[in-house]
Image (cartoon, rainbow, N blue to C red):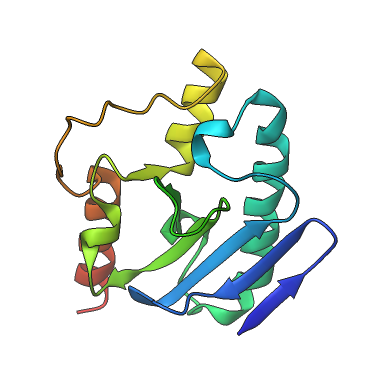
Length: 146
């Protein structure tokens, strides 16, 4: 299901949702991989995040704000093109958010600002825990809705 389309971005409902509200924000143009993101790309990704919030807010529960949305990327990506996950808890399957394969928008922005690119651990790193911020937000939303 297409939510929004523009010259620069596409926002669609995920075909493999981990939540009732799971969308993909896809930048158009050449951005094949999270490791290729540099400082010059961050404005584009920030705009994608803003457009996602603007277009998805009317579809979400009334008590859901931007602070309840999870923005992040998978690495390696599911496709040969970068996409941003936008997920609102409660989450049915937290596997997507395991380290070191999930990178929150804020972590990507911080790494790019500090190092000029995302810092990705080497291939010897095994499957880690669920991103702590995602786990905390999911627990909080689940508790609120009980």
